[in-house]
Figure (tube, rainbow, N blue to C red):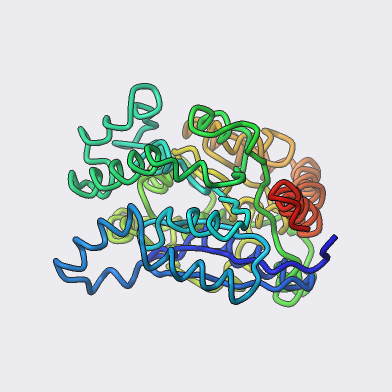
Length: 403
């Protein structure tokens, strides 16, 4: 068996860095540390900002199938004797041509799905501040009614055409296997994916994360008298941050610290300008965020959509910190109510949870311990590596006995 692999990671980065980008970098670092040769094929959406009309028309065609990507992927595979191609995001600059190129070169390709894009043009099964499964329950053309992608009929149509054409020409059949982050995602995508080609692998927290914690926290133990909770993430309606601010009207003796940036930044600044118990910090470094989380009472994650596997949750578990989530069918399998965190459905439940953990220090510390143990048992780097590398070997064995 070949011990050290040549791995090509393919990813289209978003304009605003998100958890998906963090996962890609974490996995690459994990593989490099164990001696594998990792190569990248990367594109960045910031390229699009300066596109003129002609380039935008070409972008529409390239989103469906990019000749540029097809040629470049083939060249990389040949030049570096690539053993396996691991794809993350392909939209809009890379396209499904990466699958065709890998197949042409007889190299297995695996796709990690970080969202629901294959069945929902908006990718998050969320519309008008509510869960939306119209495209799942009816057909994907439902998205046109509501201009689900970027609130644009043309942009939404381009995504639908891309998905339908690639389905018609069987681009997705060129993928040897898919990685999904939770069983819930597998259930939602079951009509699109062949169950025999699906693996469930969660995200993880790298060892370097723990080292950073030790460097910047200096081993200070959990305090009993924390006076604030933390929200960290994109400032977007779907993330529930506006709802959380409204709920905080009923929280009088505890502060809310908000970290992040996004389309609702100005709205949030306006909403909290007269509030003494809510403070906005903006986007900060990981080290600073870790320190604030460490000294907080809890991390609150109020997202309303079916979040796939938020990094802030597993990072908080690694920090021995309770996470309080808004009732969410997908991440309920990560946070177990009363065991390693809490789940709330309304402002009254949130207030009761906060009062409970403030006034029951022994139980609070026990739940913090459970949170850390969940990280150790399920989301640590070594276990994640073993799972991922075994997937690679399995696909290579199936692909004409390449090992």
